Amino acid sequence: MATKERPIKKGKLSEVVVERLNAKIRSGELKAGEKLPTERAMAESMGVSRTVIREAIRIMVDKNVLELKNGCGYVRQLSFDEIMENMSEMFDLDEVSILEIMEVRMVLENYIVKKAVKNITGEQIEELQKEIDKMAQIMNERDDAVEQESAFHRGLAEATGNSALKSVYVLCEDLLRRAQRDSWRVAKAIGAPNTAVADHQAILDAIQEKSENRAELLMQAHMDYAYQNLKHLYGKEEKK
Image 1 (cartoon, rainbow, N blue to C red):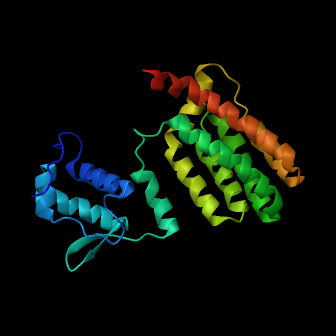
Image 2 (spheres, rainbow, N blue to C red; image 1 turned 180 degrees about the vertical axis):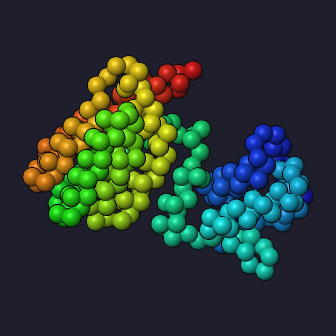
Image 3 (cartoon, rainbow, N blue to C red; image 1 turned 90 degrees about the vertical axis):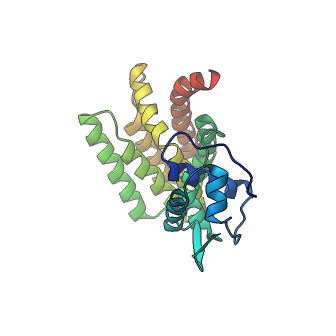
């Protein structure tokens, strides 16, 4: 008999089932290549219909987390890129705080900018300059240029020439997407100066000049500023 789980009471049922199955995969309770319990067993253990279980499995098959063999669901052995693509949805932000993820991103950014100094091409520098120019134009019209800032930092990660590093960085950034918008909002609310354009231009200038130390110091200052803005908001939430 299947172990009875806590009944699902809130949220779209199939999405909650997906979250629970993802949690089992993360914890190792369900391993790569392992067959899922029967639809009936999962339906009984989670207190939902078999239709809900089938919908959850379909969602996870579409996302390449599960695969079907002879009508049965199995956990797929994912490639590194597939793991990174799915990780943001499998990540439980109740277990890890926004500030902790931001701290990981800060470490990555410092390494990325140093590696970019060594490996960046002239064409990539031109692309990054275009994103800064777009950022400046948009900020003349409104305060939020998150998409352009994101494109700049992803472009830097691309310039390292390390695809695994870029994938890990993109995961962190995806998890922080809402927090990035909050950082801009908080800076405006507390009257902090918006230095985004100047910061990114200075970083790019240092990269173009092949000044690794200066580029790292500028990136560190830029990330510290963003972190303090987030701490102003999320630090309060975590103390509650």
